[in-house]
Image (cartoon, rainbow, N blue to C red; front, side, top):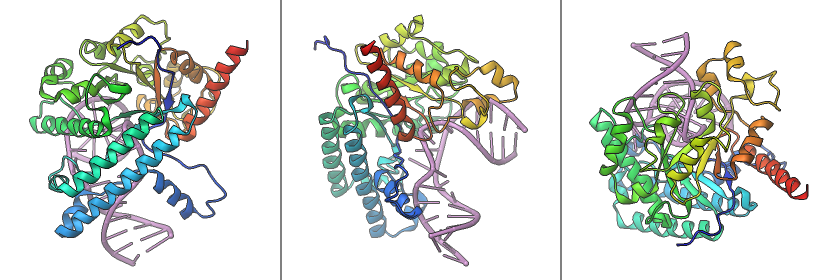
Length: 358
DNA sequence: GAGGGTCAAGTCCGT
DNA sequence: ACGGACTTGACCCTC
């Protein structure tokens, strides 16, 4: 397959859509209802367990139906945005309790399976027709290597759930098809990188073909995860790297960027960006990159600095994203979701237009 | 409808 | 020892 034309740059928000403050939402409830329509929900396993068989089945089906419809609305919204914004991280709550004993038997029933399979197939087609790049990022419980065999088995099952969902969306064969991926962290200190690499043999080919591994802020930084780059694409989180390295911002010409690109083996990489919370930085110059040493000295803990902001308030970081877009797409990990990613994309769009005009 | 306890899960950091 | 952070605060019951 020839790759003469590289795909266009993309950035997007993660999991949850936040509606604009709209005068049409005259009450708080109206705003909440608007958000509910666009976002995936869930049901607790404890609640499901308390219900009788018929109600239990109905409740799960209701949530799944809602989630399929909400995901389709999210993708339709993203597809209607400018090409730069056509990327979405999907919420893991799509099929609640898929690997939990309370819900698992229900997912085995033909009627629910058919509902899910037909729904996801249509949603995947819609994403591809709309040029929307999709990903998932399972929670911290999804680890493929742990000293606790039970935790490891649960983690692998959780990864397989994400891979199955991707497969039903139409991304089930080949190396990160259309850039689709399921991104996780290395996990605990032990068995670490080597355990992670060994356990790649324990997961399905579909999951291996979708998997990516991200540098974290403490145990497994960029250099550590690049040791997996021969097997698995590396997702570079610039904010994690800043925290882990105590203040380093990578530029696109940094040699390790080439190693990250190589790890994706022909697929356009995805990276993550976020910034420390606005509240920690009342006097910070939004035009300068956050200064880890200075913030640390003025009393901000490692944990505080690692936490994410609501919006992409720092213009220097935004400019850094614009530079890195030359080689990578971006997931914007801000608490304000689309309220952060849309203005960021607009700023970058203006920057690109300006560069062309100049 | 608001308020508050509860929720499947691993691991680390800070107190 | 325990709460918070991370993936993401939502869900569900009671009043």
